[in-house]
Image (cartoon, rainbow, N blue to C red; front, top):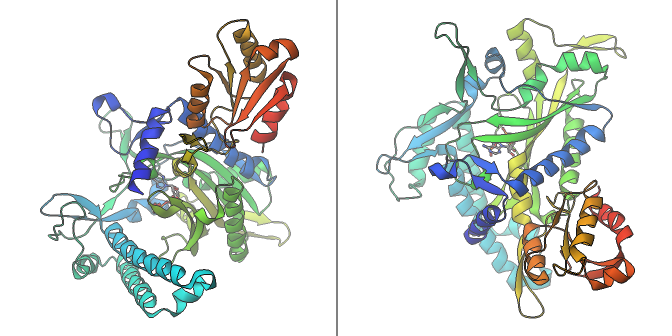
Length: 503
Ligand code: ATP
C-alpha cells in the first residue's frame, strides 16, 4: 500500500499534475502547486461539482466570498475558542503529534486484526461466508470491536470535557509509542488553534488582527440574508461556494490529503427547523450518488456516522473513500442546526431571519451542509485511476484511467509520420476540436510510445492521422481503457468525443 502511494506521488510529479510548492527552496511542508495537468483536473472536478450543485438545482445559487472576513466572524463561529487540535510532544524525539490521531491509529491497527480474521474465515467458509454474520458472532472479532469502541468513546468524552490529562493517560495506558522512534516519553496534551493569523492595515497601532478563513462556510452564513433577498429564493434553498481555506495542520504528511492551504467545495442548505432529519438523509444520499456517478467503484465508498460531534452539529457523517492508505474522510455532511446564524445574530446585532409566507412567521433557518475538499477529491480520483496493467503480449503499461469527464486532455492528435502532409491534417483537426475540448498535438517518437505517454497522462482518446487519411478522410481513434482502435470519419470525431466526455 505504501508503494502504491509512493507511485501516486511520483506519477503526479512526473506527468505534471502536482509539484511540491517552492521546490527550488526545498519545498514548504504540506503546501503544493498544481501543474499544467493538475490545474485542469482540479478545474474539471470543481466544474463537475458546481454543475451538479448549482446548475442542476434551481434552488441552489453560487457565490464567491472573500478569504478575509471581519475577525468577529471567527468569534461567532466558535473557531477562536474551539478550533483546536489536541497536541502531544514526544520528549525524546521532540516530534509533535495529534493526540487523537495517535489513538485513532492505534485503533486502526486493531481493525486490521479484524480484517485478518475476516479474510481467514472467508477462505475457510468459501461461498457460504457472510461477512456481517461472522463479524457479529465471532468472539475474537467482537472483543476487538469492543476494545475499539471503549477507547474511542473514552477519547471522545475526554476531548469534549476538555479533560486533556485523561487523553494523555489513555495514550500511556495503551502504551502508544512515537511511531518514528518507539519512545513512550510524552509531554502533557495541549490544545493548539489551527487558524493562521495576519494583519490588515499598515500602521502598527491601527492594524487589525485577521485570520485566513479556515472554512468557506462562514462566507455563506454572513451573506445568507443578502442572497435570499436578492435571489428571492424560498426555503428550502442552498448557497454553494468553492474557494481556498487555510489550516495550520500539524499532522501533514499525506501529500495533498491534508494541506495547510487547500480548497473546499461547500454548500449550505437552509431549511425549516424540524426538517433537518429528512434533509440530512437526502443530502447524504445525493452526495453519495454524485460520487458514484464517476464510476470509481461502489466498494471504494462508505459512510462513517459521527458519534463525536463538532460544536455546531446535531448529526454528522463522512463519506469515506478508500485511499491508498485506507478508508479516510473525503466529504462531510453536517446538520448544523441554527448554530451559525444565531451566533452571527448575537455577535452582529443584526437579524438573520427568514419570513415564511406559508406559516406567516419569521424564524432562523436550520442548515444542512455538504463539505468536500477539492484537493482530497483530486487525490481520490488520481490514486484510484492510476493502474499498472499486464498486457496480452507480455508487456505492461501504466495507465491513468481518469473518468473522461475529468481528464485534463480529452484527445491527442498524432500524425503517424512527420511528412507527406500528415502533420497539416493533424493540426487542422486540433484547430477544429479545440473549440470544444482541451486537445494536444504530438508528433514526437514512434506512435506506440506516444500512445503510452497519453495513457499515463490520462488522455481518453488518441487520434492518428495516416496515409489512408489522405485518401478517404478517415482517422484511427484509440480508446485509452480498452486500447481498441476504430476507423472513423474526421467529421464524426467531435460527436464521438462529446458522447464520452459530456455529463
Ligand atoms: P479531518 O478530520 O480530515 O481533519 P475535518 O473533519 O476537519 O477533516 P471539515 O472541517 O469537515 O474536515 O472539512 C470538510 C472537508 O474539507 C473535509 O472532508 C476534507 O475533504 C477537506 N479538508 C479539511 N481539512 C483539509 C486539509 N487540511 N487539507 C485538505 N483537505 C481538507
